[in-house]
Length: 245
Ligand code: CTP
Image 1: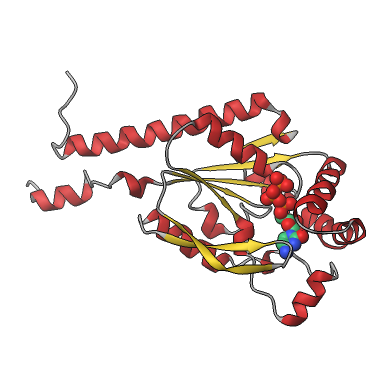
Image 2 (image 1 turned 90 degrees about the horizontal axis):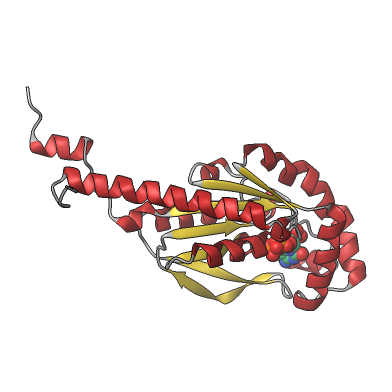
């Protein structure tokens, strides 16, 4: 008994347009481990159109005025999962996966809050999701094609964080060190490090590790190629692409 054409179309050779084939790569790791440099290096090496870095900092929750005061005194915990609006992040990634555009919040580290403006992101081909807790939420982990964990010595991380926070985030050294020992370091042990075993690839020494980054890029390229082959195969089954001879 043969199935109706409609039946076989929906079960065997469902056509999914390329923009629904969005790949998401998650990069987690300690603050100052070099996640953002690794993400940028991957973008450069992939050398493809429509590769976008999505920084999880854009999804910090809005603070009450009391929390705001604490934040300015370096007494607010920005390193626990509760400080991030995972629900909005999950909805955003799901929308992008459906090919919809999304409005990404713009975050100010100096003011500890979202800015009134947002950035419009049209569904790209690859998203690199970068953040200390990029592999924390199972709803996100389920959507990831590649899971990366960047590692660096904690003293290197602290050194980098001090320089960056003073230069780029309007902070003072006393405050940075207080926040590090009160929140950042304990959270590393409690939430960040436990993501390590679920990652596909661990990059020791972050951006310095060009061999590991090369391997990551090749792995991503292979995954993208597999996806595009599946896509062509689906089209071929529908008779939309001429078979190779
Ligand atoms: N954070 C902060 N103040 C805020 C919001 C976040 O100090 N208002 C800090 C958190 O304490 C958290 C860090 O920002 O530890 C997250 O950013 P981080 O991972 O350090 O920066 P990236 O550039 O994303 O990563 P990397 O340093 O690894 O390149």
